[in-house]
Image 1: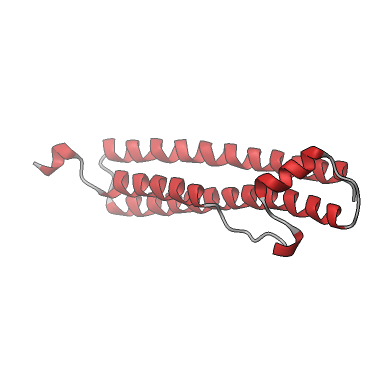
Image 2 (image 1 turned 90 degrees about the vertical axis):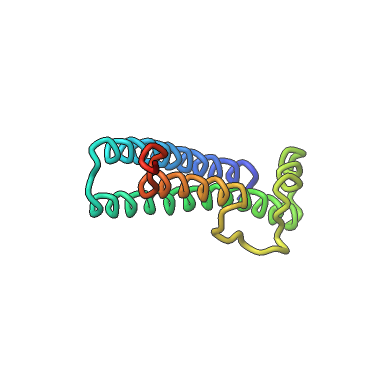
Length: 142
């Protein structure tokens, strides 16, 4: 495999990831809309449980999309460093990618784990979901 083929496959993976990210964003917006409607209509507890399960699936899917993004970035770096190790001449852009992501052949294939900022973002969204569904509104606390 040459450098161009690595870029081509990586770009296809990034396009797939962007489509999945768009789906996650639409589902997150839909979840916040459903949460707002359930609060307006004062829905019973079983609907809150179903909504919580739906929001949990969105959080899982969001973490998975973030994981695939990180894995794609590490795979680009890994494959380019593997190509460099075989003695093939690689461009300065490829060397910059290896330096930026810092993932080389010595580290082995990339694992499927999200990065720390993604975990923080999805934990915050999860808290927003749970708080919006289950916590009382300030005017209800009085």
